[in-house]
Length: 282
Length: 282
Image 1 (cartoon, chains in turn brown, green):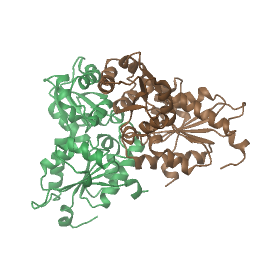
Image 2 (image 1 turned 60 degrees about the horizontal axis):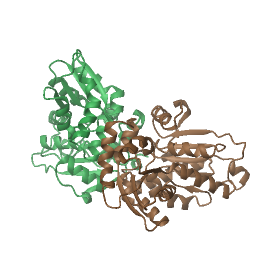
Image 3 (image 1 turned 180 degrees about the horizontal axis):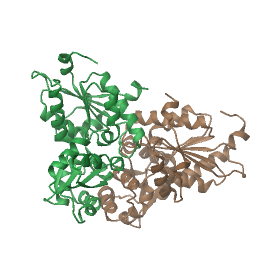
Image 4 (image 1 turned 90 degrees about the vertical axis):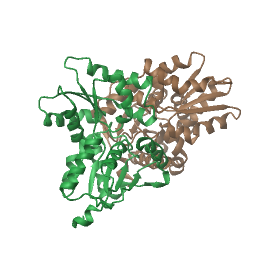
């Protein structure tokens, strides 16, 4: 690790996700920090993480983080909710001299800020819900909060299939969500605890109605990181180029195609580097 | 490898799948060969295979096969359509002294046998459809066949979620399938080219109607393997115990829970062995 702050601050920010959902976080990071350079790694050979055990997700996350630090990054954003919920303390311990942030704490903060009543519904992957990371993070911020959580694995498949609006999406959303909102002290806020879910925002809005606050982690994560870099004098020089490099562990063509949809900009598959973090740390 | 046929025939049959879908094949194998012992390996740490590249699926399949042969098996069934479509020739080359069969050729044979008109619709994962393995296998058996194929990735998620009947499943099936059947020379046969799909059979039947033949690979794979073992004098002794052992690369509890649903029998998570084929052949 470089110790010279002038060299360190010119390095890119590493962003890691199980696949392409984390690109919704990258988009917010780029919008908030236009001078920063980014390296994004999507572990597409082993996705999804949300149905896998904590031990396996931790192993995968450590391999990915090791890999990104060997490429030279000044800090790490774990843009995957499942990996944030499961592996963040491990990663922060391993790379203790640099900022390592996840999306769960910023997401929980956004949910608490949006909710007037303190009754918050969280939707996420099976693994994130079972681990209870969002529930605990919300309670740490606001100990009178009432939190209900529900795993919505089909939302991931819908987002990847590109079926993001229409009757089928709304019917599935009703099946997952109606029970959460038809109770006494019903939530006034729906926290999207998986980076795939923001692309379904319009359909979710129609299902839960206009009175419910819909929040995700992307913007609050970007704000939290910008503050952290500034406080540690690690922000990029104003001459920074604002570039993004993309790496995936499988399927460059598919990555580029789906990423273009998530980032809302074209991406050439030739610009996606194919890598294998499992080999680096084996 | 044991050369003594008496020792060899007493060994179990290895069955490999990306996860739990291949259990529909195991169920058919057990029904057709009640004296045989089985070892089933589900690569749940890296599933699904159907959205991944051929190179990655081949690497995973070779690791799994290597692992099963180190445990002592007399033959290998690749119960995953994606791995069969992508990696079968590689596996047959590597383990050339023993029977290695997949599910694509038996599935294609079942489709050709069922179809009167020779017009066959195949539904499978993205990777299986893009590779064209079913289309080629059907044409090899029946060169006048007309084959249409469609990837239905949401069916995998529905099967894993246990949403196998009802309006949502049927609406999704209509969206995927209506276009296949509303053409001139419409197919008279729907071939389920993914081992997850048979659990959706009732819903698919309602969507395509009673006139369409619904076929899958499980029974024809079992018949093909029984014949192959008999011809090579590798069938189990009649005193064979008919046992099944289960191994998974992740999530014993989840494996046991979903497997019970697929096998239609209880399975205790303590009876699922957690293994890592990637370490064996690294």
